[in-house]
Amino acid sequence: MKIVYIGNSVAKYQAGAAVEKVTLFAVRTSIEALQFLNANHEVDVIISDFNLTGNTGLYLFETLKNDAVLKNIPFILVSEEYNYALFTTALSKGISDYFVHSSTEVINIIQRAKSLYQLQKISSQEDTIDLTNSSYTLPLSKRIFDIVFASTVLLCISPILLMVMLAIRLESHGKVYYISKRVGRKTFDFYKLRSMRTGSDELIKKMAEEKNQYKKENTITTIDFNKACPKCCQLEQGHSCSPILHIDNHQICEYWHAYQKNEIEKSNATFIKIVDDPRITKIGRFIRNTSIDELPQLINVIKGDMSIVGNRPLPVYEAELLTNDVLSKRFLAPAGITGLWQVELRGRGGEMSEEERIRLDNEYADNFTGNNYSFWYDMKLILRTFPGLIQKSTV
Image (cartoon, rainbow, N blue to C red; front, side, top):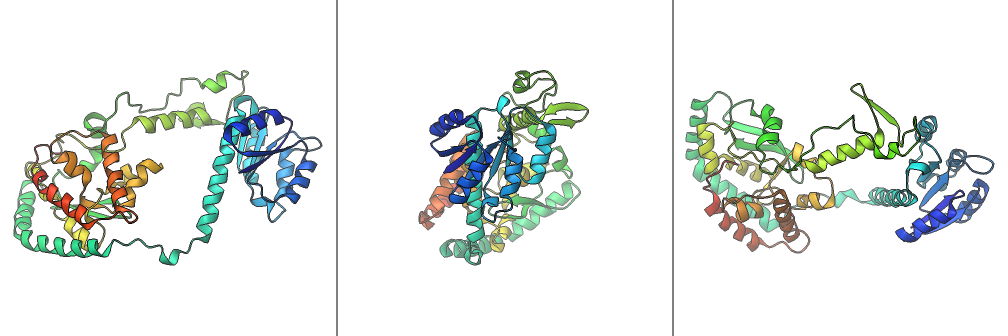
């Protein structure tokens, strides 16, 4: 990628560009910058100091906005000290990002430039994608098997389902079935027989903190407003490394708030599985141990929401945490009633770490995508599922 830097810290930016392996063109004034940019339209990102000879970086940005080609190039503005008025003005005018030299390493600014470049590439690719043929379809053999298998099983077990539904209704009031939003390759209504007392969803947050099987050590739950930002501590009194946020009668700089929020997300488990869940009814414990509560998902299979074999669909509150490539890779495979992680560990009654589950989900996604899909691999997983249908735990 090609970066143009406008300002007086040329040596620092050249060193940073060498480390990050990007091409850097450096000029010192806005006039030189305009001459260079008009002659070289193949520039990916512009980094400009605010204080330039004769005018400012913000003036240069507004000048570039009048050019049909140059106005689309990401523009980063850098000032020597943090100025709230400049920060708000720059962002309101459409600056891509704003940094302060006194609290930010040059290499971090170049890394941000690389990030903006990648986002620009993705955006331009999305604009040219033909969506007419982009709908996702299962392999034909997998879809035919799903419909035949699910329909046959539903027909055979209908007497059992009727008896179980009657037992659920006699033990506790409420609907005999349970519907929740789940996320696979799409969001859909997920069907199960109700195994918990009514109103159990309201207790999930408290239960997750106390009894989650995937709970990590040293979990961070709240932002510490009393702990000083290490970057702000390096500045003169009255200055902050980033804009000040006012939250619940507390003041905290934007950088320190974002950093702590990120640490909270990293320390909390992505998945939630409650061991020996006290919300479960007596009949609920039985249908969970025998996996009978999962049988209505055969309706999801017939509808096309799920497949017999795939990665388990996730509740929305779990799916929204899977934001990076490694975690979200699981969604390349369809949602399924059974899958690799169930037959590997759940059927054996073993405990499973969050990392193991992510690895197994991604392994099935690898075996499903491209030309790797095998109908017989799915059959193997189905046969391995039957020994695991009866289990001791109620997770």
